[in-house]
Amino acid sequence: MIKIGSIELKSNVLLAPMAGVTDLPFRKTVRKFGQFLMYSEMVASQAVIRNVTRTRTMMDADNDPYTAVQLAGADPDVMADAAKLSYELGAKILDINMGCPVKKIVKTDAGSALMKDEQLAQKIIKAVVNATPLPVTLKIRLGWDSQHLNAPNIARIAEAEGIKMVTVHARTRSQLYSGNADWLAVHNVRNAIKIPLIINGDITNADKAKQAMSDSRADGVMIGRGSLGAPWLLHEIDCVLNNKTFKPLPDSEKLRVAKEHVTSVLNFYDEWTGFTLAKKVVAYYCKGRHNASKFRALMADTSVTSVEQLHEVLDAAFSCLYFHVVVH
Image 1 (cartoon, rainbow, N blue to C red):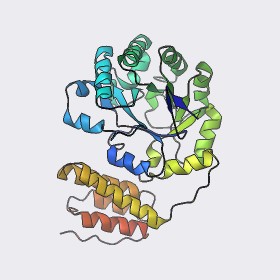
Image 2 (cartoon, rainbow, N blue to C red; image 1 turned 90 degrees about the vertical axis):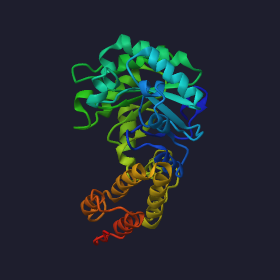
Image 3 (cartoon, rainbow, N blue to C red; image 1 turned 60 degrees about the vertical axis):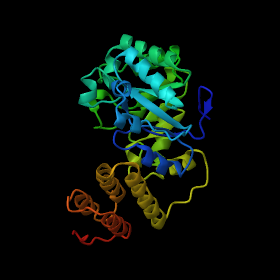
């Protein structure tokens, strides 16, 4: 099994950090299905230093030893200070983001932009690793674009500086989330390092997880967008990868999980934020079901204002029905 420093993981299936998704309510929902290593939403190091309330909320791991706090930034000293504060707040594992491709992160020279500057990347890795006694992991992409596939070199630097595990999203920054993840290309990272390697990108079911592991020779898989509205997916993949007995969840159980997730969101946030996010959560659970587009449209309707209406939509979605939800 995978070890990150002294921490031995219970599964080689991990939950990816996803902005606006992997908050504490979502992670608690996934936790019901197993002891997977889960990553917080990406946290801006500058915001940690400024003690931004929303940022501290994003870092809340609820004393879960299998939750990693992911930090983003481009200043080694600020990243080190953010790491220290994360440690003081109870983090058990830290992660450095060098994979986020979105423009607002890249334009600050953070995220995947750091793959263009290996010297700065090395300084940040060294600063964060040396800031606390916590084990530190790293998330990267294949490179900035198809002409600069330097993931193996970044991974070698990371291992030399004390990083305990590397996760590779098998796309370049220039691809964003388009095209297909190139799992075979991650094989080059496997050849470059001895520490645990995790493969990420387009792994939306157990068959794809097995193929990604085979192509990349990675030690584990990280599940991202495929888990939206399907927090049980990590359990399913874990069972298939590790030859465990898997019993598919009946729709009645999925409906119960969805409603509990919505309740958790409403209880965790203030009233306005909670309801706004709860509508998004409901839309995720309707994904792939009969009349899903109509249910998603309802969740965008500003006239849907009650918890009862959210539950009506979920009941209808999991019954493969569609009806007009009464709007008051």
